[in-house]
Amino acid sequence: MANVRTRFAPSPTGYMHVGNLRTALYTYLQARHNGGTFILRIEDTDQGRLVEGATDIIYGTLKATGLTWDEGPDIGGPVGPYVQSERMGMFKQYAEQLVAEGKAYYCFCTEERLEALHAEQRAHGEMTHYDGCCRDLPREEVEKRLAAGEPYVIRQKIPREGVTGFDDMVYGHIEVNNSEMDDQILIKTDGMPTYNFANVVDDHLMGITHVIRGSEYLSSTPKYNLLYQAFGWNIPNYIHCPPVMKDAQNKLSKRNGDASYQDLVAKGYLTEAILNYICLLGWSPKGEYAEQEIFSLADLVRIWTPDGISKSPAIFDPLKLRAINAEYIRRLSPEEFLAKAEPWIDSAVHTPINKKLLCANLQPRCEVLGEIPEQLDFFDAMPEYDVSLYANKKQKTTPESAKEALEALLPVLSDEALDFNDRDTVFDACKAKAEELGKKNGWLLYPLGIALSGKQRTPGGGTDLACMSGPRDDPCPCQAALRADGIFAASPHDPIKRRAPALQYMQKGAGNRTLQKIPAGKRGFFHAGVFSDDTTHGREKSG
Image (cartoon, rainbow, N blue to C red; front, side, top):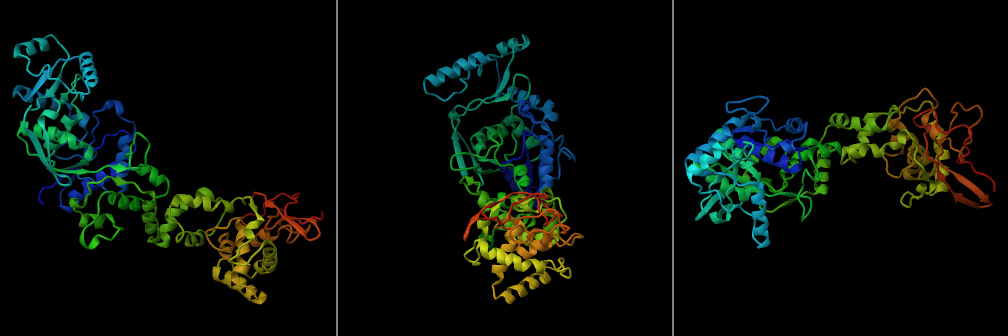
């Protein structure tokens, strides 16, 4: 397809929600697949809705997603300017040309008259519309009223009879009775063009061959085509896309604060995954790619065809996006994942840890980067937990057996010769202790993970958690974590002044033990200790 020219023409009215980004993507793909030109045009004629900084958001989003343009406000081009407000001088002359040819007219109706007219129409159960009061005013009267300085608008003169039809690449052939269309305003009282009029003029002057936009513009398209015909211009090819819905009844909307590209990035979704998912919102590949879901931008350029766009509304499915994002995370190299995960890690962990080992554990489990911090809170501060966490049927552990396991592990993990930089060495040492005790690895190591994190689900098993803190000049960090009241009471000569609880019991009578909550606080696994010297938490007391 030769000389394909497409444009993405957003209004700078806020963040770019996924529907806008999808339109930009489809417009980009249509141009790139056909070796054409992708144009960025900023449509800012609706001055009342403009949001400061929104234009920069548009630039940033398109650049971040790789949707680079060939012509636009920042780089120029042969048919600029590419900001609609900078093109204001030309629109009125085109409207006046239509007036001179009898295809448009001056309308002097006041707002008060129009409001009364519409109220009467509503009272009779009619759709509100303009009644054509000024449509056939004598030329002399028009000139007199213009000379008197009466405010006016310029309206398009829609034929009263016949039909106007057009072909859409998604919805097929559509026809509308001309009698059902209103004489739309082209130039407002303040001399500014309406969106619909400026849109047609700009698309023609910029040589746009394919217009890709939301299906909400289907009803306006016949009016657009009548304008093209009135000027004698070529009508572009239309590709109208169904809306993106948040559910069966409600569209995604910037005004309602629904999902924007910026929102998704802030939650930790990868740009590539977002773009991939958005493309599949209402579009599906054909042939050999019909069952495939993961596509790079280059892949999409190569296989793009607009006949894959569905007529049905697309429901934004967060679970589907999550699954695609998880797949993209899995495909990252360890180095790439570390680079992307590191800011999220640093936001939650403020003590030295082995990030490479942490990421090796995180990457297979991670679906959204933004969920990383909540998994790491125990590195800086031990959360409050109940010793019932030590009970696990699969591992055959109980709080009492956990005490036994942790007592057995303490000398192993306190061995100065043990290299915590080598996860395999640490694991093998613990495995040997399990074999010595005649126990399964899980029986021994499951309690270790709980003691070091206070959680059942952690980014790695007990020995990996032990290794993540890295070497210290202090006594063994694991020793600090395991030297809990109820296991070992720290001696006055213990260099670790503050102890972290791993198990806590309170003896209320012979053979009667009540499980108590482990209080929250910092702990020695990552620091030189956590609780103050006078803490009595975790100690077995006689009742």
